[in-house]
Length: 315
Image (tube, rainbow, N blue to C red; front, side):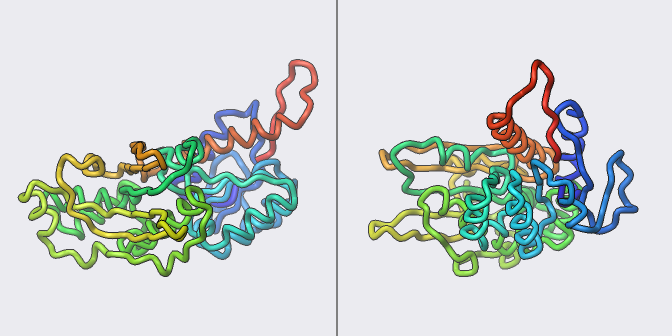
């Protein structure tokens, strides 16, 4: 494991609850002395990867350091699970090429949607996708839900941080950068087309007037941060992150608190509604662990199992 913060701590608990399936190697963290679980913690990436683990779970956050760590793990032939949409958005081609070159695997269903299975839905749809839109940042949705109840932005943010929905520095969420990274991943999955996250137009919650969410509710509407990406007739894609005032009967208006909700339109005009918890320790940790189990199945599928004994993988 690389990283053991809020989500990583949840994943670690899930791994340790399955000792017959997983042997947890040294866990990479900034400050090993602050952790007291019954595993080894290290500040060294080399130490974390020294035993050539079968599965590497990247949850360190950030972009360049995380991408370097994923490259290192993939180059060893490991199955890599990550929830890092920023690293994927900026290093998609090199990470996938590295996985293909060395026979590893790259799994990232937790990178977009948390507990909402949007990546899995895009992969299941036959005949192609023409657009994806959604409330895809649980932090912003929680903040807007509180603002619609008359809270101040500062009080809502403190509550979100206390509940583990917002980082100490919420800029990436509030200013739309997180949603832009997610749109970049969705564009790759839905259309196979690269976007530059920095070029996606974004609206920031910090630009809202104090009563904007309440005034929307008085009009019979609800204010949401909505990300949209769609395929254009010329084969290019268009994407944006905006603050939208939606009628209360709009499907995306139903997203409450930290929930994520997506509308996927396929080439036949069918609309697929995907929803689930989008922020917090356990929705994301559970999505990461589902990818870990998929990685385990992939590994066991190419390994002989001797007799009836289970095979324990190194994570």
